[in-house]
Image (cartoon, rainbow, N blue to C red; front, side, top):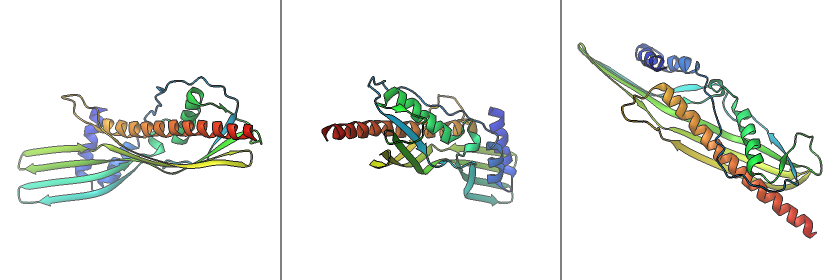
Length: 243
């Protein structure tokens, strides 16, 4: 993959459309996305059952590359190029669609720390339903290529910027037709690179960094949702018993 990354840099340098060239090559990626199960398991009685309903596909279907700036200078014996682009993650470069990853992560986390069981049955008066809508789910990173040529001397520099993830989620919890609670969540993350000494950065590192940023943001979102559903169901159960 290292030679793959270098060849893309060369193509970007000579291409009339650097964004299209970069996007075509990044679309060849197929990256795994995983969930780290490191929360402490909770042993609680799962008296109630929950139906989870993700109402939309939150991540854009296609990875996109947009141009932030492009500066090219031509002198008699000197040429310089400075190209900066923004890459936004899409479903097409993930091995598993993000909506499936989100749902499976939420269900697995519910088994570990949820005080409720996940149900596949149709909604009924005795079952809780959690409707989830993701208004925004974006992960992007900047990529900059700089090159200068003076006669037979050439200098090249590539900058990889940390990935940034922004997720905004809205949830609504009900039991049967009875509304229980609703809540909005906002998560922002800037993912630094974990680079060892003497290691040259590549597009492989950039893409992996973006997926890691999305995965860790999803993990934070899922853990918060499960914790809040636990609290809401417990509170509702207590109120019901008092009646």
